[in-house]
Length: 302
Ligand SMILES: Nc1ncnc2c1ncn2[C@@H]1O[C@H](COP(=O)(O)OP(=O)(O)OP(=O)(O)O)[C@@H](O)[C@H]1O
Ligand SMILES: [Mg+2]
Image (cartoon, rainbow, N blue to C red; front, top):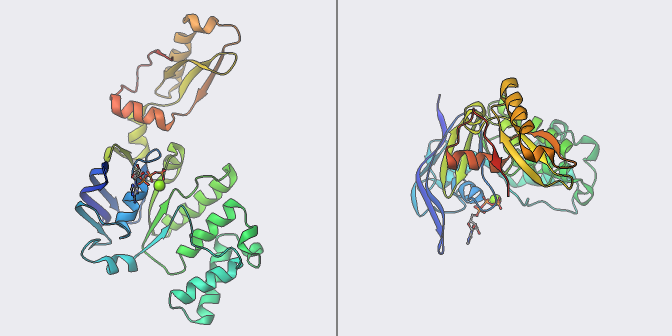
């Protein structure tokens, strides 16, 4: 399979902060790739370098076969970027924004109108086409933002935290749109702070930690390292008394609950047991501690 994006030893420093400390990535063409990391991990910096907006201090990045430093124009012709803050006009309607983008991208008047109508339909915004952007909900705005970046067909799409701040329903709608783009052959490189989002969308996930890729693989490969659902015991006022990582199997869950049953913490007045998916914190804990996924062990919370 051909490679859409690859980097070797990418470094970037802002003042005394080393943001990227030698980033190696390889993204197969036609796949969805998620770069997962907490606030300040360097996700936007990575996207900015790959989209030619920021120059790396060292290392090589190739996008669509072109070196971002040597051939930025070639790269720009083959990518679209949807950022955390979109450059859209609040006073214009959805249609007007799309037509304007089409005209700026060199489409003729009619071609720009046709493209706008097609994208509004595809992103389920036809009903809102004549409304000013100022009246759009967060989810509608993200969809329009995505539509704007697709006015011109490109093989590689960069999405910086596409669903941050959206409610569950809008997030799911956007996930559907992103999946359908990938099914149509677009390579999608997205950043996210949500493990669930990476899991649901991405063919491959890379975990960014202290400027390097701490782990990389399919969602299943990562889960095998991280473990499955976590059984937790909370006190009456919601504080976590105990956390038991499991491998997610019936046996693993039963073993965890049995362990809990024999723990003095379970006898605390009003204590409640619940099961949750692993969080981003669990991922980092598992990866940085090299924790064993299978055997559940008691982790005493402070
Ligand atoms: N232009 C800049 N000048 C100085 N420092 C910067 C600049 N851009 C980013 N940084 C710093 O680099 C680090 C990484 O920032 P970056 O925006 O890449 O993180 P991020 O993973 O996208 O975070 P978030 O989830 O908050 O969007 C942060 O400490 C940030 O303050
Ligand atoms: Mg960011």
